[in-house]
Image 1 (tube, rainbow, N blue to C red):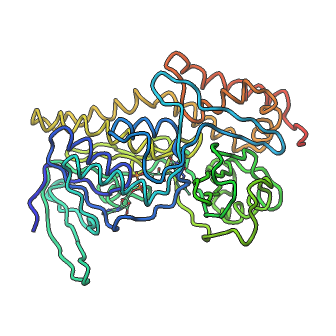
Image 2 (image 1 turned 45 degrees about the horizontal axis):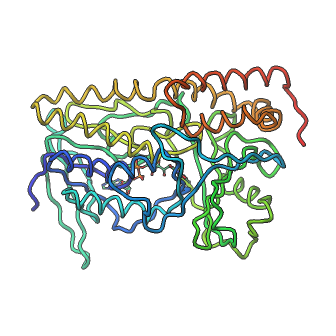
Image 3 (image 1 turned 90 degrees about the vertical axis):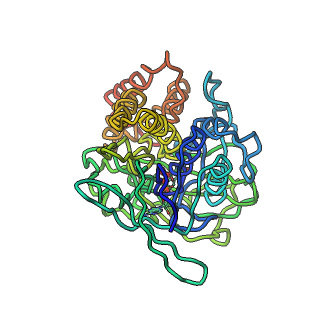
Amino acid sequence: MTSTPQVLVIGGGPGGAAAGYWLARAGVDVTVVEKKRYPREKTCGDGLTPRAIRQLLDMGFEFDIPNMHRINGLRAYAGDLKIEMPWPQHTVYPSWGGVIRRADLDMEVAQLAARQGAIIRDGTEAVAIVEDGGLTGVELRTKDGSGEVEIERVHPAIVVIADGSLSRFGRALGTYRRRDYPYGMAVRGYFESPNSTDDMLESQLNITDREGRAMPGYGWIFPLGDGTINVGAGLVSSFKGWKDINTSRILEAYVDRLPAYWEVNADSQLTRPVGGKLPMAFSVGPKVGPNWILVGDASGAVNPFNGEGIDYAYETARLASRFITEALGSGDLTRLRSYDDAIEDEYGDYHRVARVFVNAIGNPAVMKALTTVGIRSKPLMEWTLKVMANLLEPEEYGMAERVYHTIERLVKVAPEPAVR
Ligand SMILES: Cc1cc2nc3c(=O)[nH]c(=O)nc-3n(C[C@H](O)[C@H](O)[C@H](O)COP(=O)(O)OP(=O)(O)OC[C@H]3O[C@@H](n4cnc5c(N)ncnc54)[C@H](O)[C@@H]3O)c2cc1C
């Protein structure tokens, strides 16, 4: 039986490990339980924008995160039209990104949290809530190497829910996802490619199904620098019939049309496509209970513009850790409630525009206009990419809305643009 920590974190992905790190750094007695054993796989595109790098640097990583391939910008295609954009110079974010397998990245951050003083228990699953008119404890199940199972109960003062997109623990505490908010699904596979040292994240903005219908989402190639690339496709839920879509088929159609320089063919596929869900725009709530708090995918933190969630898992974990530390320090757990307001202050405006944008691109005419007429305007596309990556300077925040209205106007001017 372990002793009860002040804070128990459920889940050791980006959200959970970062919460462990920031809490330990603030002197809090924290244990992170992760049901799998590191290094553990997580279905992902493995892409990190400067927002994520900023968080990693703040946690004390240097420029040479092991096994990370450095990325200098974005390349976006819409059909045969192409735009390349280095990461913008920004006062807060570095001008580089990265691609790294999640098995490597998540283990690195968990180890960092352990060096900072967090107790990291992989192979331990939180299996049940202990309740007595509210959450009073958590039942943990640990399986050792010989298959022996140990069940124990811990009674932390605060529980951080970082158990990912399906968030079984959050649901057991009464959280729910707003169905009128965007939701995404994505699928990825690994391929061999001689071009894997490319230093750009590549995306295809006009993906289609096999019948050639435009789909609201994008395809990506994220090079890992080690002879392999991560190829995937993601869609948002704002179009009719999205539940019937087979994302693996969308990926197949995308892979068939990859630019020749990737030299991808049937023989270069290393893994079968695997998919996952993306709860977006902070669609999940309530985010705070009397003694618990949601971070990362468990709170629906994924960016609807681009499907990024690693950086937002780090950011929300850091924010939550601040309020947890304050609550423990003052003995007043109601301080946790300020987390909700802080999320609204930080992301509210951006996500309001994102929600409208995602609804709009569910209309095939909008998607066509954006990816044909839109991409011919370099400044508009550069702004669009900057907005999508959420790399605006504070004085540019109104730009997200302006980009959206420009796209709206484009659609009105050219409802059925010819596809080249
Ligand atoms: C196909 C795909 C591609 C994506 N590509 C990108 C990308 O390129 N860049 C990007 O930024 N984001 C991407 N995302 C989103 C990103 O993967 C998530 O937003 C991110 O992993 C969220 O981190 P998290 O810590 O909240 O959750 P997770 O990474 O899901 O971690 C949750 C952890 O909790 C553990 N767990 C669950 N239940 C329990 C329990 N009861 N007890 C103990 N442990 C538990 C799980 O094993 C898991 O390790 C992609 C997602 C998908 C599906």
